[in-house]
Length: 453
Image 1 (cartoon, rainbow, N blue to C red):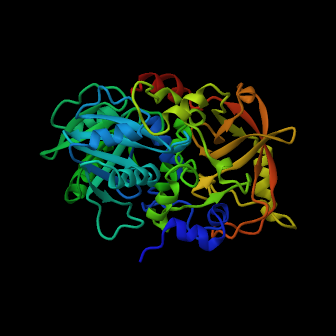
Image 2 (cartoon, rainbow, N blue to C red):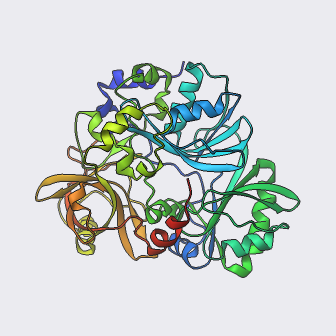
Image 3 (cartoon, rainbow, N blue to C red):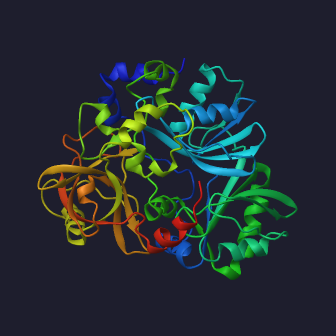
C-alpha cells in the first residue's frame, strides 16, 4: 500500500521536520545536463535560438468531461469567462485560506478536454477535488520520467531566442501565425500537424509544441537540421533550470496544503512521494510561515473577482493588507566569492553553492535581512551568463522593493538538516542588491508587455 503524506508526517513527528529532512533529491531534470556547456546554452536563447526538451520533467494531467471547465473555474483564481478551445493560460490555485497551492500551464485542447502541465503541486490539488467532488470528469495522468515507468505519452519541445520564429518558419510547411504570449497556433512538420503555444521561459520569443511520443525523433531531428543556419544550440537541464530566474517565474513555492480546510483529507489522499523538501536558512516550526500569497509571487494580476472559487473571500481580505512583492536580488560578487573560497580554507566551509542553479531543496527558502530583521525570502537562485550576475528571485516587504536597496541574504542551514544534498557547513551572510523582476531588460520591457492571460 502506498504511504500517504499524512502517514509520513505522523511518522517523522511533524510536517516541518518531514520536509526539512526529506530523503529525496532536491529537483530532478531527467534530461542530458549539457550538450556543449551550460554557459553557451544560456547565451543561445539570448543571441540565436535554443532547443529545450521538456518531455521528461513535467507532469501532464488530462482532464476530460462535461464538468472539466467548471472544476477548473471552481479551483482557479483566473478568468475563465472567455476561455475557449485552442487557448492557453497560466492556471493558479489557492487553498481555502487564500494561500498559494501552485501554478501550471493550462491548455484548452478541445471541447471538454484540457491538459494541465507543470509541477505536480497544483495538479494534485485539482485531481483531488475532481475525484472527491460532484464533477463528471475523468483524469489521465502522465507523470515525469523521474517516476513514470516507460516512455511519456507525448514529446514536448520548446524553441526560444531571437531566431526562434525564423527557425519555425523554415521547418513548418504552413505559415507561422502571429499570436501573443500563450496564444495557440499550429505547425506542420514532416507532415504532422502540431499544436503549439507562444511561450518563452527566459523572456525571449519562443514556442512550446507537442505531439505523440512516437514522433519524438522525427520532429527533433527536423528542428535540429533546420536550425543549423540559425545557430541552434541544444540546451541541457543545467541551462534550462536557470531560465526561470531570467524571466522571474518562481517555480516551486511551498504549497499551502498542510493546514486549513480539507487539508487533513487531502494529505491522506496525497502520496508521500510528492511531499518534497524544504531547504534554506529560513526556519520556523510553524509550516504556515512558509506559505505564500498569490500577490507575493506576482499572480495578483490574474485574479478574476467576478467568479466564485476556493479561497476567494480570504483573498479579498488579503488584498486589503500590505503584501510582500517579488524582486530580483543580485548577489554581491565579493561575498559570493568568499563563500566559495571557504571550501579551500581551514574550518567548516559555507554551504556549497552549485552553479548554475543553487537550489538544494524542492522548496528553497533563504532568509533576507535588513539590520538583522527578516524582511523577505529568497526562493530560487542561479547564475545568468547573459547578465554575468548571480541572481535570486525573492519576495520582500514593500518598503525594501526599491531597486538599489541593500539587503543581506543568509546562506546555509542552522541546524544542518539530514537531506542528501546537505553537507556539514556554516551559515554565511551574502550582501545583495534589489533589482526589478524580471532582471533582464528584454524580459521586463518586451516579453511581459506582450503577455496575455
